[in-house]
Image (cartoon, rainbow, N blue to C red):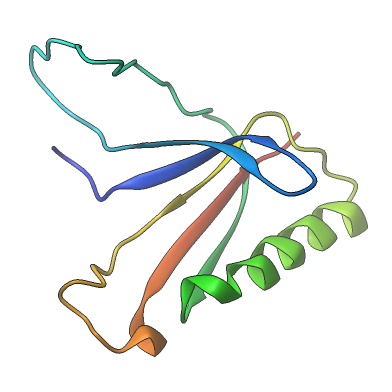
Length: 105
C-alpha cells in the first residue's frame, strides 16, 4: 500500500450508492477474491478538504457541486474521497480530514 485509503462513488442513487474502496499499490500484485483494478481520472478537479465527522461530508460535497454549477463545470467521472487522518488513531472526529475530489471539465 503506497497511499492513504480512498472511497470512489461509482454511482449515486436516491437512497444509496455504489462505492469502491481502495489504495494505491506498487510492484506485482495478484488480484483475487473479487478485487479489481480501478484508475482514477486525471486532469482538472474540483477539490475541498473536509474537517470533521464523516456524517457531515454531505455539506462538503454539496459545496463542491454548487461551486461547479456557479463556475460552469461538469463532472467528468466519479468523485472520490481520501482519508489522511486515521479515525482509529485520532478519536476526536473534529480532527478528521477527508479530501474530496470531483473530476471536472
